[in-house]
Length: 596
Image (cartoon, rainbow, N blue to C red; front, side):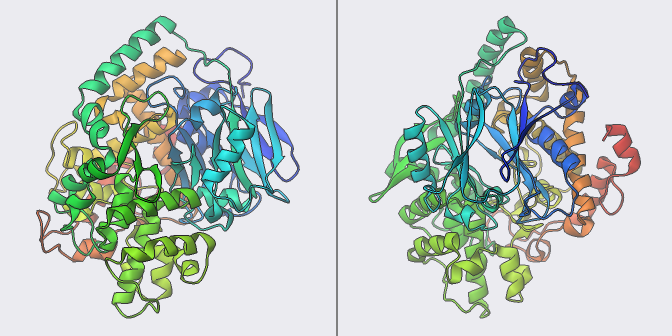
């Protein structure tokens, strides 16, 4: 393999550090030119490194299990590029998984002179990592253990001014299966339980502070590129207007009008009080100012305040998770539940969805704790109990899949592969249904956001009710998304830019040239490598399934009424397009073609 420090690189900093927190040893991980071109960085390179390091039966909480933090070649340079990816095997799902977060941490980490780091081992006592221009140090975090993410950040930034901090809260310390890593207070690597893996290693936080420049292959072309990207972002109605004005919760009224705003654990697709928890209402009664991640002109973030607290959000998924999913219309309680999850380090989607599952279990007479639809007053205590695994919280900390199985009603958990499905009822959009079912990390809307063409008309309108041709569209969206996650950029740029523009970014910054087809092949390779790992872990076609509610129970109101998901036909077509066998496993021919 070629040592990445052996020649000048552009975009990449040329250094990945592997650190064992058990004994403090460090080593430089070597990456060949071929691997870098085949997997780029971020999610793609992380999946490659993880797959090479681990067997598919590794225990996510074992000391040997690595957790990988990576930036990409565009991090710190392109608009929205303050992001980073965290890669490991999810304790919630058992799949290979990555979680992405915005804010400022990715940019600051990269400017320390590394593209990322890999953590193995388990510290004897709580520690944090200090990452600077001079390298990585392991520091005592005993005084931080037990503190929430906001207090942790405040203490560490007081000691290290101008730093950016990523940390876990009590939920991660207690290894709640869906605990998040929070950076810059309110930005989350939220899905899949990456915070629990940090907790299992006694790793409380990462503090990053860097001052190094990021080299660019074509400085003059880079200036022209930035001007072009600014125009593309500004003229697109989603990135240039909607997200800026109303944040991601602009979707509340839109999705509700399409009859697919999941209500009371997906029993219904229309929430009668949607207007009262919408982006418009947040702007009217809670908004203090718009906020943005590093170098981001979209500024979809919301700095908000209730009568009692202030913070960031809530985002669309959080509004839904603590709102319609639970039959709750109290915007203040919803917002404060979101604040609390950020402080304690919990994934809002799984937290709200698991409470919703428990409410339906109670409604069915099988759950011994009284939880009723619309009761907003229970949220604060429930969320705290989950983070500390106290009383009922210890059961809810299992997540909806394990909770529903425990009480004999597995069909009431709205998940795929153990990961809760987000705020778009798949009965109203066949492509999004297929995207959920075939997502490598479980129930996730971001593996392929088919909502864009099916609901938002971007880049074109397609019939959301039809299953015809959806397999090809979903596979394409999955491949593009894998590329964007590997660069590492915000996925909102996909509204404004084509694969050709992403290829142009990579060429100007790194000097590497990709045709559109070559770059899409990178995405295909990443998706297949994830699938290959999952196959070795025992996942097959049986796991590419949706809850029976979506396959057999029609919605009875709204514009998506009288519809179910037609999954099997789409799956057969999807497997053929992917080059997988009838069980959903990549064939030897496919792996050879993709050079996996």
